[in-house]
Length: 440
Image (tube, rainbow, N blue to C red; front, top):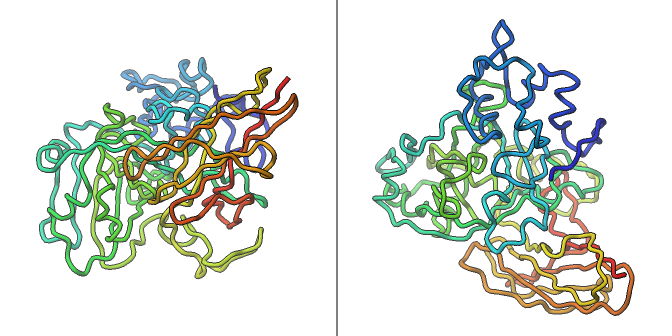
């Protein structure tokens, strides 16, 4: 269940949740959450993108939306405290744009169910997500510009299915001290669903990549929060060498079903091992450029970290930031749920581990605050780009309070640190995950 919102959010708690907003200023809540501007009779929507967001949260369109009074919170949301349709148990971090993370214990499945896949939005989702009419344009520095339907993608290219990790670059930001601005993700902005689609590499090769190409540029159908149709909320890309990685998919299915609207239906990129911002949702265009892409959230400090170690709170010049590429080694304890109280001293512990485009070579757990470590059983990945599942049987010596720590080491010998490597934007937190257990 979502946590009950506090009436006075702290600096790091995100904006107030649905009830707080609607109780204090219903009209402002309409605009803040849904981008909703009613007509002169204080009914309906004048901005359709906001209607799409409300429909996505409700799980259906609203046939009589034109009659809906201003400032009215839909009863379906009121009854569930803002739970998003088809996203059971996610914690709402932000209403506009919509962002929600998954508590670690709900990520216990080897393949993340659709209802437990986190949501990271930068703008307002499109109104129309019809796979029958959706098209993808491939242009820029290509020999043969193309506009492809989803049916074209399925018929002209090999369709593949892969388990692939998507993780927000800011996952773990809530633990930075001093705090970093942005969504205060704790641990749950990561998932590993099965994605079905075609290789980006195959599509680009069919279009003909010109020799001068340096970078891709991705665009989606989501709208900017300002409502300005000329602005994109986000448009990132990857170096062309990365784009030719056969594990990057243009996906149209998630776990064998149509992609969830909040996960980018009906078409999205999936770029495993790199920040989730590279995996453009509601994908409409990929164009090739002879320079590093400079779209929204590609420049300045967005998805960038200092190119040298910095002390906590240190100011860093913009010229010293570099674009994040591969994500660091990381692990997660998904069972038991932190806070377990039990009379049993023998405990099964399990979770997942991943490291950009590398394999995990070992996963160790500790119950004595890192003094000694036990090797966990580590499974091989389902395929390149998937996380690896692990488990361990632990015997606790006596009654009392314990912390179980997990530490992954990847194929290049990099291990998770004890402490955060601080940076101004709160990216790439890969400190060891730990949970609390009390034996009575």
